[in-house]
Image (cartoon, rainbow, N blue to C red; front, side, top):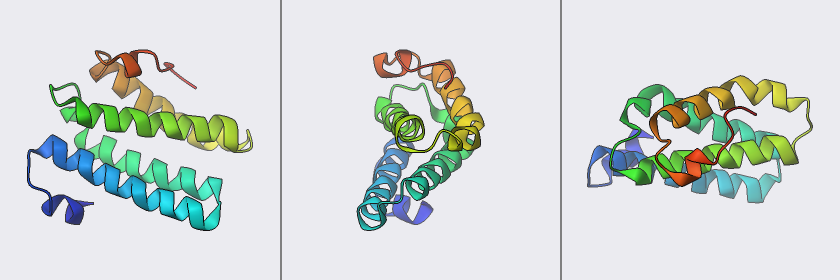
Length: 121
């Protein structure tokens, strides 16, 4: 992801949001090729885990594009786990998703999209 960030000029928040967007495009391509919902969920979770582990302290600033990109990606993972995968997989992703939701509600609750998201799955 760092390699993607170096090609973008702008501030850190926009760079991260751009990198996440580029990574999501690769996930979409993987999804089209393989039709593998579990693999898609794994890739989304890897992206989110990396960003939340390294950059969650930057959430809640005036650069809402970063917050919005992470919130929409978390929402996509939630929908995938709840609606497209067998319910046994929910246990595998539940702790990570609940951690992401907790961080988003703590730092980005000023966004209507985040405010309307569930506290836990």
